[in-house]
Length: 80
Image 1 (cartoon, rainbow, N blue to C red):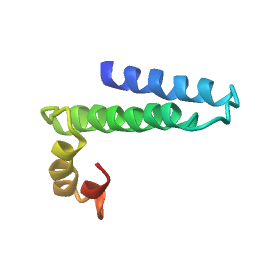
Image 2: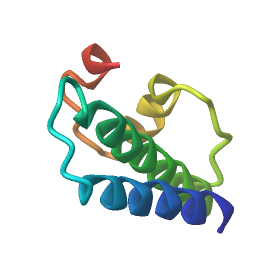
Image 3: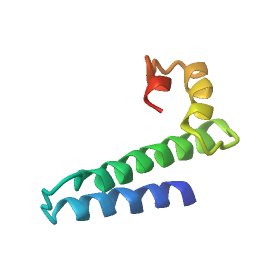
Image 4: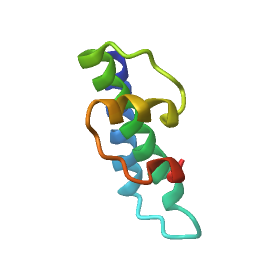
């Protein structure tokens, strides 16, 4: 439950930051980072709970597990 709760904290923080409506420069960058990190933590929580997968800090380390489980992540490694 720890990874899931941490992901929720990042997601809720991103949502709260969005409400500030700051529109100067790259103000959306921290918001996107929070959402991206939340997604990574949700994925880790799922893989740990359902498939007993050892966790890697990099998303790239999770891709082989996802592919092995049938996930189609076309081009995902180029986004990392």
